[in-house]
Length: 307
Image (tube, rainbow, N blue to C red; front, side):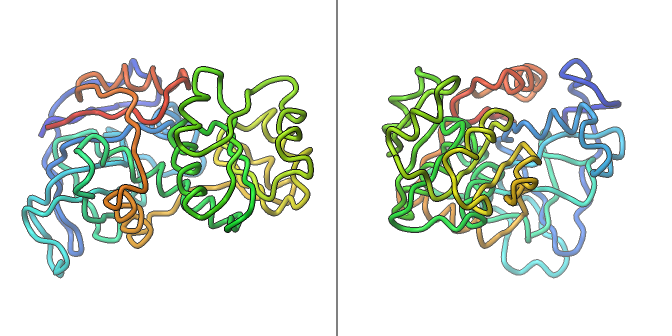
């Protein structure tokens, strides 16, 4: 099969397109013919070696955890999926080696769900990791109806999902973003505020008594600002900055969960959850996809088209 191959830690320059053996399909797994693979910041962070202390890596590796595709074969004891089924998955395995930037990937059924019919292949590939992260973040900080949640980087991959899902829970959403994304946030149902100096005052002008919960996708100064507008620090969750834990909050590392992924797919099919794809690139341009992701300026998701 064709796949992106990485022989050593490094940046986009270490990614090459080559041939790798077709994956073996273990009991409880399905073989997926990949249509599209989502690109996430964790892909290039792993590739650079930033997470070496916590993630087992076996080179050569094929990056990627997000996938949409068609079941091509099923392993022993798989009764809930059949050849031809259209699926999505957050295919995070116990070690980093055989990822989704490839024509084929094997995935345990615990990691996948049926593809939403309302989404095309590229949209579907952008849903799993970021959607699950947002969904589980809101659960972690217990966002409910009538509450106000502050989402930092609300126009990004995770932030756009967190904004939509919080609105679906009946929450009021204040979203931080650059000026160019303010109209976009209004479309999602959020009240936009700009980053930078004066952020606390801008949030307080909208919510004088502060917010009930914070979902942070930026870190740094956003954590500092959150301290000024949130009274219960246990309701602060960050996907990037461990200082949230020092304040009594949490750092979120998303967990594969087929039930959660199925719920996200249901929401998408119901027209309640949209996936915003900023850029679609062919598989052979994976390095460029990483460069774009590293710039941190995308609205929504970057996706690789494989088939």
